[in-house]
Each structure stands twice: as C-alpha cells, then as structure tokens.
Image 1: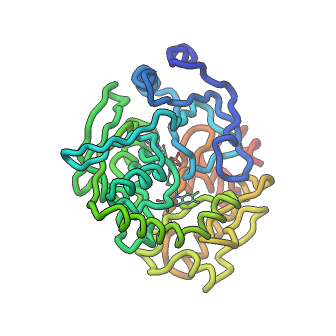
Image 2: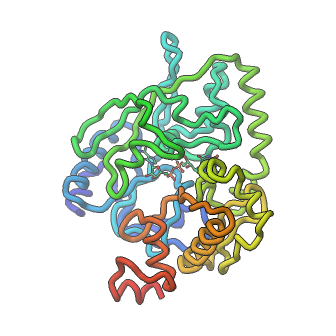
Image 3: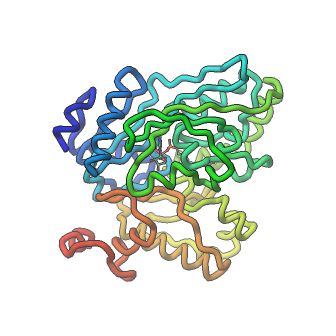
Length: 349
Ligand SMILES: Cc1cc2nc3c(=O)[nH]c(=O)nc-3n(C[C@H](O)[C@H](O)[C@H](O)COP(=O)(O)OP(=O)(O)OC[C@H]3O[C@@H](n4cnc5c(N)ncnc54)[C@H](O)[C@@H]3O)c2cc1C
C-alpha cells in the first residue's frame, strides 16, 4: 500500500488522530494513513492513485466534513481521505442560469452565493457539510415546507469513477435519489467507487430580497438546534428524521416527550436535552456505551411506534463502514459478537 501512496502529490500522515476530524466529543482512534484531497492541479493525479487502491482492493475511505460520521475508538486501518475546502468554486452560467459548483464548496457558501443572484436554494439553509456529500446523501431539512432536498436542484454530477479511472458526467433520472439516499451512496457501500467532484445545480429566480427572507426564516427556525448541535457536539442525523416523519407522522422530539424512557444516558451516550434532541457523547463515552444506547433506542421506538429507525450516520470501524447490526454485534456483547476474531473481541472488552 505504501508504494501506491508514495505516488500521491503530498505527504501522507501516518497514525493520524481522527478525533481531529470528528464532531463528537467521543473517543476516536487513529487512521493508519491520512490524506487531504485538494481541488487543484494535483487532484487528477491523486484520484488516479485512489483508483489504484480501488483496483488492488486496498482499504480507503473518503469523507468531506465528517458531520455525518461516527468513528469507532479503534480508528481506521487504511487510508482516510478528507476533502479540503481550499479552491472551492461556484460559477454562474448566464446563458443557462445554472450554477457550476465544485464538490468541496460548503452548502453555506452555496446558499449565500445563490441568494446574492436571486435564485432560491433556501431549503438547503443550515445544512452543514460540503455540496458533494450533500448530493451523495440527498441532504435537506425535513421541516422545510417545500420538502426540497438536494435532488430538486441537481441537474448533472461530475464524478471520478475509480473503477474506470476516469471522470464521467451523470444526469440523474427519477430513480437516482431517495430519502437521504442516492445511486452514488448505494454504489459506494463497502467500497468507494464514485467521488463527486462537481455538480450543475439550478433553481427558480425569485429575486434577492425574496430569497433573503426565506433564508432568514429558516435560519431563525434552525437557530436553536444548530446552536446546541455544534455547542454540544452532536450528530445531526444518527437516525433519518425524514423516515421517522414519513412512517409515524412525528419528529423524534415528539416521541421523546411522549415516551421519555426511549432515551437513556449510557455513560454520556444520549439524546441532547436541548435543541433538536440530537445524539451526543462525552469524552469518556466508549463504543460499548454507544452500542447500548443505539440498541435501547431502536428497541423502544419499535415497541412504542412499530417503527424500525433508519440509521443515517456512517459508522466507521477499523475495517470500514459497518451496518448498525454489525456495530451492535461488535460492541454490545449481549447481542453477540459477529465478525470479530477472539483477539478483536478481547480488545473491545
Ligand atoms: C448539527 C447538525 C445538523 C445537521 N442537519 C442536517 C440537515 O438539516 N439535513 C441533512 O440532510 N443533514 C443534516 N446533518 C447531517 C450532515 O450534515 C449531512 O449529512 C451532510 O450532507 C454531510 O456533509 P459532510 O461534508 O459533513 O459529509 P461527511 O459526513 O464527510 O460524509 C457523508 C457521506 O458522504 C460521502 N462523501 C462525502 N463527500 C463525498 C464526495 N465528494 N464524493 C463521494 N462521496 C462523498 C462520505 O463517504 C460519507 O458516506 C446535520 C449534522 C449536524 C452535525
């Protein structure tokens, strides 16, 4: 693996503490290798190097700002790539009224720039993270009255296909996106094949003042939950809010006030008592505690509302992304370990 990594444009960090990339105040292990992908003249070379890792089946993962990520205390035993925001760009095409947006632009800058031109991207106000990640996860704010998620705005997507080793433009059809889901997210499960590098986005022109008003309204509505979200170090979407509302007609806050025993405090792993009641941990919280909380909450919601909570956050363990049942099997001994060697089981104890 080191031989291939040596072809990258800049030096790779070794044994990198992933806590630096983590929004949660939880224990987080190290990445064996860490690299920042820059959107400049070095990008194409670096993407081709990732293509070599792909072909050789060598372990690597790619994240943007990590606001939808929970990293285990064992870290990641491969190359962790973070998308850097330097050189991000948004260009407006006067002829087509479309915005050409680099995948490393923040959603915040996208909303700000498009507002200045009078185009309505206000439903994305307050969504954290980068545009590329927003497209892959079809982000949006469930409480927005228009219910417009990223899919509403996306016309074309430029990806680097690691299998083919080349750039490709995709035009999403009706099946491309789902609730907090996309073709890209599905294809990248287990092994990252497509890296989003650019997109073409469009929306209605309603004039700067009108967009400003909508943006301000949503900013106000989200202010409290965003404040506590970032102050307390919470995960925005451990469970998909959209799925919960669709299945039960209720938000998680309502469920928690109707049935407070849905929540427990497992050594700091708990729903925040403030804002949008998002998931939080403390520096002493272990993965075993997180697993205990996950299994308690999912069982209680099933018991009271008959709903299987839909995990949205990415759970990253030493060997890559794991599903919720795998995470519980690994870290909650009551559910039985699955996929762990005896040695690894001892490490988890
Ligand atoms: C306080 C708070 C509030 C939140 N509010 C919302 C909300 O209102 N609506 C909502 O939808 N989400 C919300 N979230 C969740 C999260 O912000 C979104 O999912 C966001 O889109 C993630 O962006 P990111 O840059 O942090 O992506 P990351 O967490 O870094 O990555 C998310 C996923 O996208 C993949 N990915 C990232 N970049 C690329 C790329 N260029 N190419 C291919 N794959 C890529 C990663 O592999 C990963 O699977 C919130 C989170 C927090 C902490």
